[in-house]
Length: 171
Image (cartoon, helix red, strand yellow):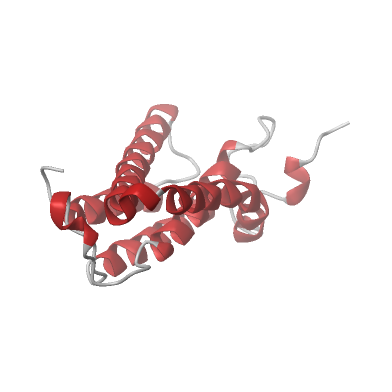
């Protein structure tokens, strides 16, 4: 609560976007670890900011907003693998990262114009009542794409396109 939320939220989205947009199919293991760490840090920052914003905005009635926020992220993880397969059909896995990176750039741009509640005592008076819905929806899309990448079968080669059959049990 010591720092303004908008620059933190935009920065977290930009960190995630840069990490996603610079991912490549042939990158080394060490570089992949750095990318995943940057993506995790960016997602962790903005998720924390969304939780704090919902708590400040709705105070005692924040439970439904937080439940929706986290349910949307879980739903995104369910929808993600087919979206990743569709995104990478005819390409490699990095295409899904690049598409998601563009979504994060759009989210960062959107966050610069949408009113966010101030941290602390002034948080009860945001300019828009449902401004948190779009970040929640985009968080679900982000979780979907990241979940899809984490669920790849280990026998798939890094440059191979993802297909729905990759997510089905082999045998």
